[in-house]
Length: 123
Image 1 (cartoon, one colour):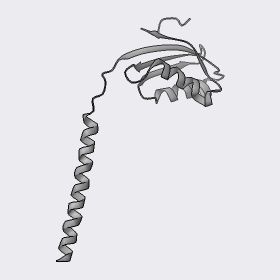
Image 2: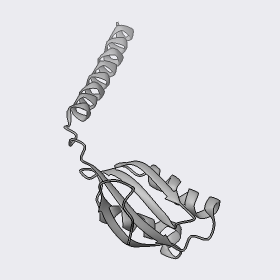
Image 3: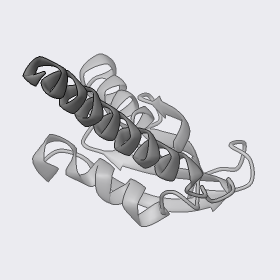
Image 4: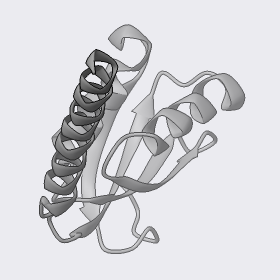
């Protein structure tokens, strides 16, 4: 008899934890995500000394940042071209993030501006 009570108690506990876990997943999935607001940002980056160690690292780190959809860092021109979702990340967040790479000692963003295409010159 005790053995049955233990089994029933274990099954009830397992069911309770499973049911709670499923409910929390449904709540997370039902959160509305803001519609994409695609924007483009272009800026100069000072402090880059090499293509692989600097430009590629900045490009890699930016591409992993939430809200950024595409990144191209061009070493020879010292510029970055960033496509992002303005509902998820702001221009200030992007430029601050770049300025903070490597502890904030190496790279500085200059002349950041919104662009409609990446063909526009950065002044």
